[in-house]
Image 1 (cartoon, rainbow, N blue to C red):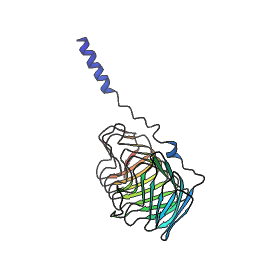
Image 2 (cartoon, rainbow, N blue to C red):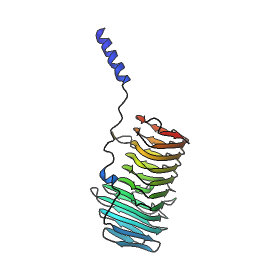
Image 3 (cartoon, helix red, strand yellow):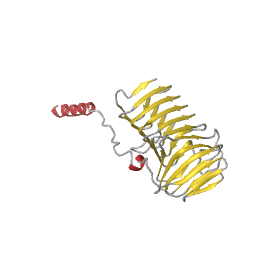
Length: 283
């Protein structure tokens, strides 16, 4: 009887102890946070073509192909242009947006095919906008699925403004991890506004998200330690046709301010939900 009582007491104690929040202390790398730059190759778009000053970029019409690691300053305006990044899986690229308006008539205006990490730095005082097409017909071995699309890790930092108008699928998407640390960012998309297959982590910025489906989504349901959404800071305004925040595994929100109008759930996950009190409000 004593042994049975001890077992029952142990079970009661275990069920009474709340699950510890996941440790995201190192989720934002130094590269993710780096919003400064020194020398950079410059890439200037116009409807007539792309002017490049520096190495690492080749041009075909109004498409710029970045094939070397480094820092690139992007600016100008083009109604049918595209940036394609394809470097090795061990190489990093920092794209500094210094006042760029880029639309693409048959695909995504920014497509990262391969890299270790790519960051978008929103230069101070800059206004940058990306608009894709409703139908993607430009040939790629693997087609993009977002207006700003990366098949590897993608981070956004800086203090400028970014406007993303998705007409085809998702707004900003990464097949791996998506990190946002700064900027004034507005995203409209028919499906998900922000989508990271492995994770979405937000550590700052002012974000306005309008989504036909989920506002923020992490999709990986199979790999342990992935498929999560983590929000530590930032001011978020989310309007969603389905869930505001959706994760296949865990959702952890420790800070920031989030205003939500969602037809689905405010927070939806198959794993744990650790949400700080007072962070989320209804619009």
